[in-house]
Each structure stands twice: as structure tokens, then as C-alpha cells.
Length: 246
Image (cartoon, rainbow, N blue to C red; front, top):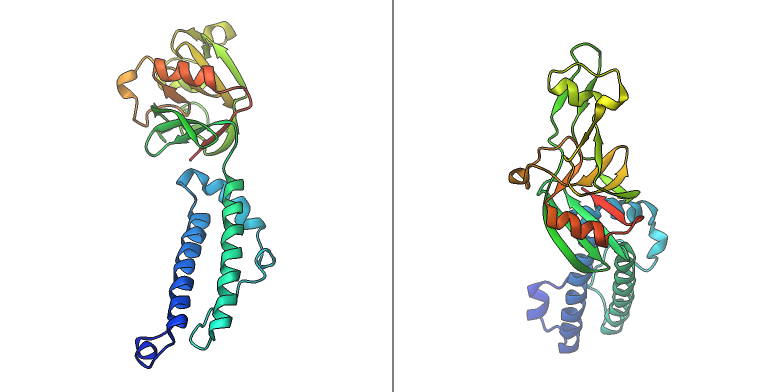
């Protein structure tokens, strides 16, 4: 970039204008690059990783490794400005491809917040509860469980009304009870709310009896919602809708 001494020495007016225009475009380009690197929000880190891992220097062959404008003439600066504009447009197109289309769910496990979106429109924001991160060891066998909500990209695999909970071994061990031998002794109704949305490996978005704990990380890995929010998500998130959890 030009130094203050260069300006005092009599940099041509048109050169200064071009310098200002290029600086402005460089700031925009840097902002877009930062957005690509960090994500439009933290949840897009997973998606952005896919893009960055597949991008190479061949994607932007006109990008110089280092821009030294001190020795550029006005025509050269104008040419550089044109290249930066072209790169800016390509970055914008790349950003647009990162955003999901149709209806999808975003879950922030740090803030215990859930968003239901359609394209870039927010349909519903809700307070939820996610995994506690707590560990539970089986005193009789060499095994343990970690109660985390999985992170990554998933999709709604199925939807069910009035779900019944099939209690796994850890549910009995946690209560200090023996693990039942009969399968029918594992089932419990009325504890998961009116609706459930399965997203794989036994994990659900479901209701809760403990609404006072919404907003806290207290679950065994599932995502809990209040009754009204759960009903809305159930009605508006179709089977196949993507779920992004971070």
C-alpha cells in the first residue's frame, strides 16, 4: 500500500481515488474470506470445512500471493480492481451455495437454542435442552456412557406421535435398579411428550416433563423442547429435513 510519504510527495489524484477504491474492495474481500473461514455462524463450520477442503489455488488463479501497489500505475491498479471485483462475485456465489435450501433445523448445544428455518427465513426459535456431557459407568461390567448430543449434520429419519420410551440399560443403572430381563419391562409411556423426531442412533427431538430445565444441558443426548415449540417443529419439519448440530 502507499505510504504517507508517497502521498505527500505528490501521488496523482486519480491514483489516490483508485487506491481508495481498491482498498475498499480489499476490505470487502477480506470480510468475505473471513466469513468463509469462520462460517456465517458457528453451525456452518461443518459445511465450510467441506468447501475449504475441496478448494485449491486453481479456483482463484488470478489471486496474487501478495499485492504490492506501491509501484503500480493507474492502468495497472484499474486492472487489479477489475480482478478483485471478479473474485468478489465468485466468493459471493460460493457463499450462496453453502446455505441449505428448503426447511432445516439448527441446534446450538452451547446456548441450548433451536432454530427452524426455511431457506433464509426463521420459522421458529426455541429454547431447548441438550446433552449434559456426564459420564455413567456400569458397576458390574466394563462399560460406560457419555451423555452428549452428537454434533454434525443429520436428517429427520422419522416422525412419531405419542412416542414410547424404550429404556436402555443405562436408565436402570442410573436409578440403581437391575436391568430387566423381559423386553416389555423396558417400555415407558408419557415421558417424551406428544411428538418425536428421530435423527439416528436412538436420538430424538422430543418433549419433556421437566420444562423448568429447558435451556440447560441436562439430557442423555436427545434434544428436548417445550410442548408448543415441539408441536410447531413436528408440523413444519418434514421427514428428510436436515439437522445441523454444533
